Image 1 (cartoon, helix red, strand yellow):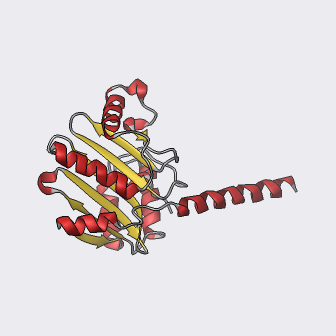
Image 2 (cartoon, one colour):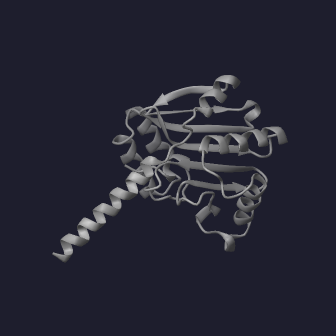
Image 3 (cartoon, one colour):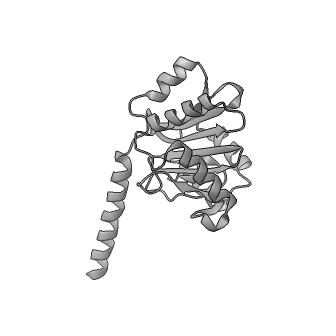
Length: 209
C-alpha cells in the first residue's frame, strides 16, 4: 500500500510540474513577429521532418551522445512537424532563433555578437530579450555580460559546465553563457520540467519528449 501511495504521489508531482511548465509562455504578445516584420530580417522557417532530424544526427557530433539521443527522441515524437525559424541582424550583430509548435513558441535562442554589435544594437537586443521573455530577468544588461564573462574566465565561479548561469527565479527558464569579448547567448524555454543540459547546441539544452 505504501508503495502504491509513493507511486501515486510521484505521478502527481510530475503532472504538477508539467502543468506548471505548460502555463509558461514565450512572447504571448507577438513582439517577435512584429519586430521581425518591421525589420524584414526573418529567414525562411524550416519544418522538423525526417530530413531535418537526419541533419541533427550528423551535425551534433560534438554534443554529448545522451543529449543528442534525447533531442532526436523529442523531434521524432513531440516536435515532429513543428517549425524552426528566426532572424539575423545586418552584419551578424545578433540573431534570434525559435522552435514553434501549434503556433506557440516553446524554445528561443538569443545570440549577441558583442564584437560586431554597436551599442545601439546591443541595447536593441537586450530590449528584445526582455520583451519576448515576458518575465523579469534577475540581472541588468550590464550584469548579464559581466557575470557570464566572469564565470567563463573563472571556472571556480561556475555553477554549470561551460559557465552557464540562470537569469530567472524559475529553474531552467532562462539560461545564459558567453565568451569574452566575443558573444553572449541566452536560451529561454517553457519546458522547465525538462532538465537543462549544459551542452553544445542550443536546441539540445532544454528540449525533451
